Length: 176
Image: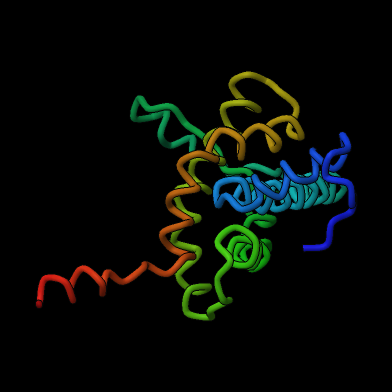
């Protein structure tokens, strides 16, 4: 690790040392990778929303038929869906290299979208809640939705991205 501030006793040296101590913790690296991915997703979603607006397209898919049977009718945000799907390779790569410090695996990359299903559903519901129900601007909805689903996603993504450790030591002890 190359240090920016050589004097660890200086104010900035202490901040840097604290940062690297935090960086050794998996949840902190998960927040960094997720933060990068979130910023990319927000920017892409907003750009796609602007494209839809410029083309005169409706950015929502409505499920009005649910209202006919007495349920709440959420809708799906198409710009967010497009950005989400296009950024899946970036998200997997960030999680593998930064968060969980593991090798990039094509097989795990193919499985990775499974971890994104709950995240996608949760974020779509939050976008609907913030934008349609609470009448917040779409950019605010795009920002708040990933924050609300972050804690649960750490455990789901960790399970699918990081290989499970084999308990060979315990098996060897029981065989003796």
